[in-house]
Length: 131
Image 1 (spheres, rainbow, N blue to C red):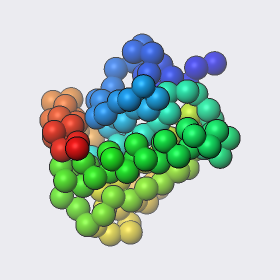
Image 2 (cartoon, rainbow, N blue to C red):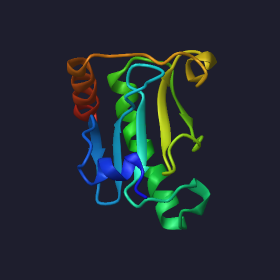
Image 3 (cartoon, rainbow, N blue to C red):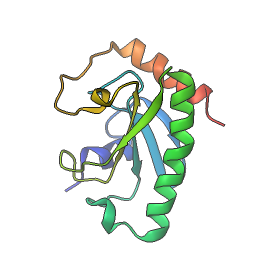
């Protein structure tokens, strides 16, 4: 069964796309912890990050690094926190979360909500910072 992320990759479900390559996709989390919270996924559906082949695993992290730098430039913060939890969606993904404090990346806290137009603006501002 396809995950929600595989449906996003296939274009069956829309997303606020930040960046894309042949193998990877970055898009805004629709239930963000912070403004600019971005998800990085391999297009190939693999549930558990440590089951990825070495090339995909390394590529996912290199792609995350490029996107993280753009997120940090677009969304003022001290750091981009990263997390791999992998329990909520059976498709490998890395969370990139703009943080100023450790508590900013606490997944038990209430998620933020942004209007569609603001999500589009956030994604656009991150895309504009990609190098």
